[in-house]
Amino acid sequence: MRVIVLSGYGINCEDETLHAFEVVGFRGSIVHINDLILNPKQLDNYQVFAIPGGFSFGDDTGSGNAMAKKIMINLYDQLLNFISKDKLMIGICNGCQILINLGIIPETSTKEPEVALIENNTGNYECRWVDVKVTNKSSPWLSNITTLHLPVAHQEGKFMIPNNINNNYIGLQYINNKRLAKGKFPYNPNGSQNDIAALTNKYGNVLAMMPHPERALYHYHVPNWQNDIFKKYGDGYKIFVNAKNYFK
Image (cartoon, helix red, strand yellow):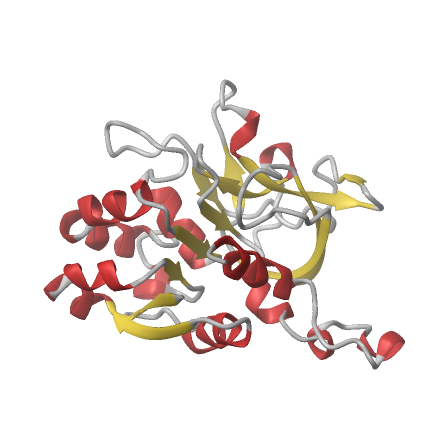
């Protein structure tokens, strides 16, 4: 099992993301976007494509927008071909914003996104731990998971979606004491419509999520880790294990 982790121009979570995949048994490579553009056929050597978090191009034209344009001009068809096969793709935080700006989630026929990620209701960069529930349990990334405790760290994480969007696209939703947060801050940290924290494509093999699973890989990442010092992994580990299990 091999994973390709994108890097370049302000993406800054590639090492942690690759480490998370390696912990569960993947072999992987961190590849700069320019190197991938020069040799897109290398995608054939990987089963998973990961776009990590960070601040690509400084978020100067909107979070994830400039990187999405670079990918759309140079690699759009190759990415569509990748996800049309029996493979997985994940975008985390800035990676989520890139996938949304690409219109890959949800799929469109016009290369124009139907979903937007806009500034948090607070107007602030929100960095905190949240609870989310799994809504799309058919996604390989989310199978056999009920809830997750994960950190978020973003300025533009508010999902705006069309009213007619299929609920099957909703991967994760923010919760408060096991119930939907109903937009209440800080349980929903950004005011996202329908408390959405992640979306999938219609097949579930592509996941765009705002929380950071790679930052909750080990139990000692969790704020209250002292309550169970013998526990090894945090909830983020479950996401990466599911990717491994998919290819067993």
